[in-house]
Each structure stands twice: as C-alpha cells, then as structure tokens.
Image 1 (tube, one colour):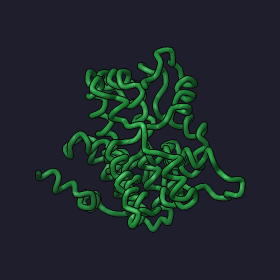
Image 2: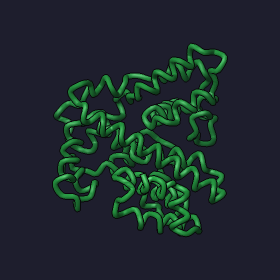
Image 3: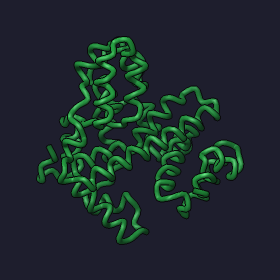
Image 4: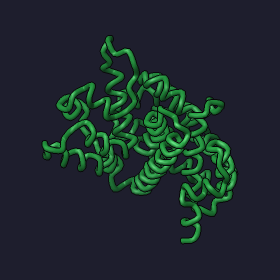
Length: 278
C-alpha cells in the first residue's frame, strides 16, 4: 500500500516507514524459497549470499534484530550471516519473511518507478562491490561492515521509490529539466527534506548500529572508511550515466588518493577502460 497523501513532513515519513513492512525484491524471495526447500544447502551462509544483493532485505533483517536485541548482546551486528546465526535459521525464516514484494507494491501502475528503483539497487550493489574491494586493499578489517554500509547508503531513496513513486518521478523530472540541480535540492522541493536527512532520522529511529550510521553519513568523510563508502557511491552513481560521464575523472583522482595509486590504475581496477572501449 502506498502512503496516504496526508503524510507530508519528515516526521510523518519517519513514522510511516517505521511502521511499514519493508518490501523485498521478487528475485530475493524466489531464491530464499528455493533455499528453504533445499535443507542440505540451507544455512546462515547461503541465506546471507542471497540477502547480500538486496539492500531492502538486508535493512529489513537489521531492523528486526535491533528491535529484538537481547540485553546480553554487547556488540552491534551488521553482517547478515551473523544475524542469522544469532536468531537461528527457523526464527529468521518465520519472523523475517521475504514479503511483501516490491513488484507487487508498485504494480503495473508504477512501472517507471520500478525501473528506477531496480537501477538504484543495481547501483548500490556496484558501489558495495567497489567499497569492499578497496577496504581489502587498504587492509581494513571492517571490510564487510563497509560493504553493508555502502549497500545501504541510499536505502531511503530505494524506500521512497517503493512508497512515494509519483513524488520520486517528480524529483527526476526536475533534474532532467535542469541538470545543474543537485539531488538534495530537488528532493527538498518535492518532499520538504532531503532523502539523506530522512535516512539519518530512520537510522536513529530504528536504532541501527552506530558504526553503520557513521559509515553512511558523508559528513564524516574525514574518516578513511567513510571516504571509501562515499567515493564508491559516487563512482557507481556517475558510472550509471555512462563511462564517459564528466564527473568520473575527478572520481578516479579521489579514489587514487585513497588507495595510494595512479588514476589510470584505478580505472584498470574498476574496468573503466574496458567499459569505455565497448
């Protein structure tokens, strides 16, 4: 069900999305069902391998764990495999079912929004792959947390494609008409707030792990890990426009500084040169 029209301000949206059942991708639901019927291969790792490609199912599991934390739990958990191990297979399957489906929520009336939402999910997957690789290169032991943070960096945008497709299409229209308008400004025109602001409010409301909140907030870019996440997100966002996007040379230079490499070496790592030749 899409949001009631009376919900207009930031607080309304935070409350609505807190009460809402987070939808998941049809492909995720299908793959998890296949696993459930294959007891031989059903385990925490196989579930994590399916969930790790779906930012919606990932945040759904994180939110559930945070809502049902035991007092004895001393450390925050961000990895899906660890969440499943903590909850147990049966509880994970029964208490966090992969439904409703995004495709059913949007339906045939919002096919354009579904396409944009799926593109955003693909972009976040690309970004998380970049960030994971760079974290490993930097010998950062928190490489999995960095991957998750990058995957969820634009989760508010994905959620709004699901629950406010018409408004999100208006945001896109503003940017198409004037390409100099930044995403946050276009969002503020339509919603009255930026989606990054909404995301931080949700993260605190859902009591998501502090490390995750820190890594997802670009304002903490003085930290190497946060810079890793934000540069991966930026690269994936610009590359989605095509490998000839004018912003990419600056991205490569910034990433080169992060990794202590040359820009040409960064291009080779992310296969940009091959993509440009295609």
